[in-house]
Length: 400
Image (cartoon, rainbow, N blue to C red; front, top):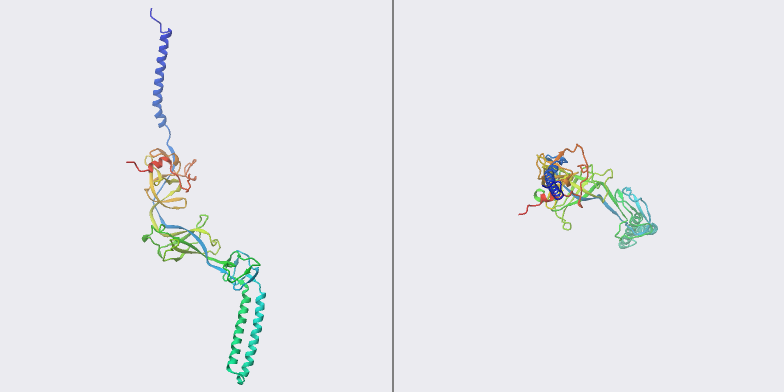
């Protein structure tokens, strides 16, 4: 009698075979569905900015320091005890305004003595003159009296000057500095320390220097008179000073200590916005540069080999492009080489991009999500955007 399939061993073998077939089919279906699931992922949305060539002035930007057009040290002409400071430090003073008072008493006594001596010699000269006209004395006696009187009169004038110099006045008009000597100090004319300084702040001078690297792109490698079209001043708060300046000094030699060509610019400072000693930046306009592009700083990536940008191609595929940059202009890099008119620069989601990946580009006025162009880029120690690993690989030279 044949065995039934419902019997124990045969039934177990059938169940095991069925489970094996189901496992194989399940694995096959999983493999078939994996590419479909991966292909179903939507393209990454990115913000793009279409760039066009433009013309910009050729500029050189340099660190500089302001200084008064006249910086005059105030020194005492006579020595003595400093009795009083007669001005408020840091205020505007006028030429001839009293600043310090030195003890007058010793110089008043010297003046009184000199006056008495001068009166005596004047009387003696007058007396001897009468005798000389009568030939009662010799010519030499009369000449000695005239000389003695002249010396006494000169000594009197010097004593008067010394007394007036006990009041130390401002030699020029300007902003006063800090007093370097306090009341009660002994003032000496041989002292190397000035009592204070007066700064003439209108106009304001700005001093700076050009190195070889600064002039490398200038025709002839040297800045000459007449090449500077305009001068701008960038303040410490990054704002451009509203009044243009002009070059009033251009050295014809190189400073052997600093290794730079020294220059000086002059700016109107009637409102007193500029202060002596400020560190600022000078921007020299020396011509015009054509066919350059303005690219947001956030879109320029820095690698060990070069700077590059990510571009959305005609088929919305990500393409890295190495570029050459000049300087910053506002929030943009000035790109001199590497781009073409109409390139669509990707300005956000840069860390998620891979060369060849498909993206969904949109303009900057459309919806802005996290990490969009308006947000600050991830920055390294130098404040420049750091390239993702895939961009670094794209920029790296191919191995042989």
